[in-house]
Image (cartoon, rainbow, N blue to C red; front, side, top):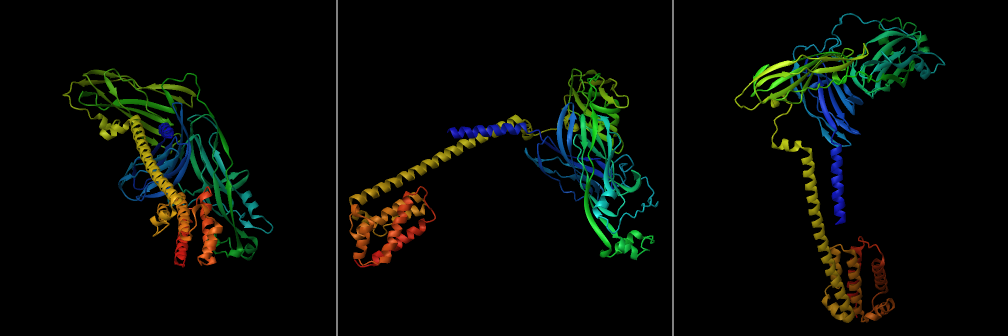
Length: 639
């Protein structure tokens, strides 16, 4: 019984631990939610607060062309002083056709269990929505704003890809190719963006691929470059000209103070050298205006291909904490320059209707990280959770645009109500000081209604209408309590069933022991009578134990059955039964010496199984068959 209570305690403890880890969130989002058929959208899967993310399984994306991804991102966010860890998987998608699409839920496996994300909707129109204009979307059309008929700048021609006699190819690669990371500033405030560019500098001919994306722990990340953008330009580095490819460009929003290190990018390069000996035999090879294409016709003996991976050097950014002095109460982490306004959907309605107030924060800064401001509703008005809508331009530095928070509310009594001003505090990096802005108060008039139910909650989605099952499971404590009770009842049932089985086994063991005692008593008092009871098969009790796979009872019954048979067959008293007497009587009966030896070996093996602590189940059937065959052989011999 003590073991049962230990099991119950362990399960309740595990359930309590489950509740403490229930804060792991797995969400899906797509930005923007409406695009043109030639535009791009970013689909992101975000796991928050998990100690370990074992697997993220994206949904099917058959209606889209995957321009880039999956791209992994990890880091931490700090909102209102609360630090949360996250891991994200993102894709850049281009729609195959117009229409409204629902991207199914994804699944993830973490240390806290299995999780399912929400579904997301994307509307694709025939006309561009403006998300492919410069500065609107980081993944815009590469031809927008540029003349496609203008020839690109010619690549600078270097002859470093000629491998001369005695030169080491790997040493030459290190001198003429490297990965470099640049930032627009090496010191900033928390929430102030830093632009980081990872570039490949080269004077060689190569095919290069990024095999490790840099991680940006401690930053919120927004990409600024078109995926697979292979445009290049010529730059000078330490007095030498290079062809420069930007392999990744991001704007980073630091989430906490300190020396934050930018992740390392690793590039795998397949570098192709042309041997000097081959060049000397073809002096006109570089005179062809299509020289790059002629390279493909160079025979293998004229080239040398080298594969080499290289990494960028670590770079640290000093992130300064925001000052504590003069920090306004309404400050919640906004950094940049902003404006605020508010408006109501209707300033006159009845108590049957529901009101809606929108607070709009616009400007430039860490808009994507701004949360809803706090509202002080006057007495008589009941407010509900807000719904946020982003209208952001992520291609600008810092992010610009606006964020709209819709606050639904209801009024129970008619009258004139004054919605107070909403304050919003932010840190202005340019002026290095906190600023507070506020909306104007809004007055609404509410008339007496007819008592109809209000539909605001369902319409706004803040508190959706829920059926009985949803309301029941909304309370986590009830769910845990229900599971705990069910598990405890299951344990009680399980223990009762095990107890019943144990009683049944005990009864069978007692019955078998009684049979053994009775058999021993019969053998001692009258072995002839015992033999007569089992004259058809003296091993009948051993056979029964064999069918039940009971090894201990089997070897006991086999020993008794075999010896009782010999007592009767050979005419030896029970107290005189020994190996010597058995051998003498068998010889007198005219039974072969071979049979005598086999009988003695069988008796020795049976006694060995009786006195060894571990009985052998595998030998049971074989030993029974040997005993049965020996009895048949002895019976066929003449007495």
